[in-house]
Image 1: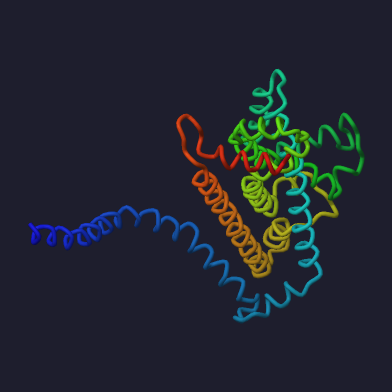
Image 2: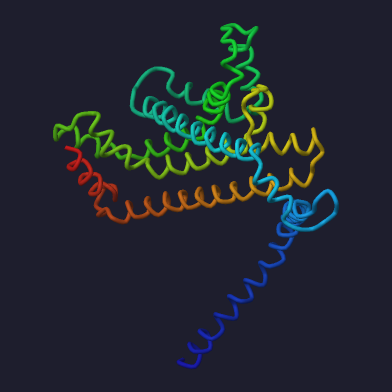
Length: 309
């Protein structure tokens, strides 16, 4: 019997190794597609950024582009617009999620569905709607407001708010009602309950939504191009101008590589925020004490409610 048990334990690593080798053919097709449609063009762009118009290979194009005032202005406006849109989306999306989740009124679900429909629209439709509303010949006739950085910022906030509102609404829906009831019974005011109980539960979801909004707003091209804001130049529009208007492909590739680096950095922050959301939820679930008919996070909710009171 002992020999059979030892033989079984020895055969387990082999079975695991065999199962891993069995998964390898399934991983090859997506890997080939990823390398062919993303890796190879990225290598070509990186190589073109190191090649000057004269054919010389080096970092001369990088030094010329990174040292130009045009690039610095585009980078600054890209970061400012992305951070401003993120701040506006977080404020507006959190407010809408709180109203839909905790304020009972007829049509709350319909309003949530209407906001979700914005996710299905291309971004230039928002810019087109703003043109009919705030353009020089629009209904409201706001004049030059639409063609300023403030108009671009308002359009981006309108388009990207659902990316923050949806995860916030899902997080608010997971807040146990026992926490709110205990905090209210202990005399905590609604504002204190919101600050000490509700928002901490939704903070990881808000962080992940904010990172995703920053990533998307930093790479926004349709809104800026369609509005035609004269004083707004972002990295995507700079790439378009260098490649299509002036045919300066090495400079366009340098800006594109900088944009890719920023996007990958923001995506890493987004994945870190999502991982923090999952770990925090798993901790909150494991910190509770299971009982008969009582959710596991009730004990943690009581502690939060007591702290709020």
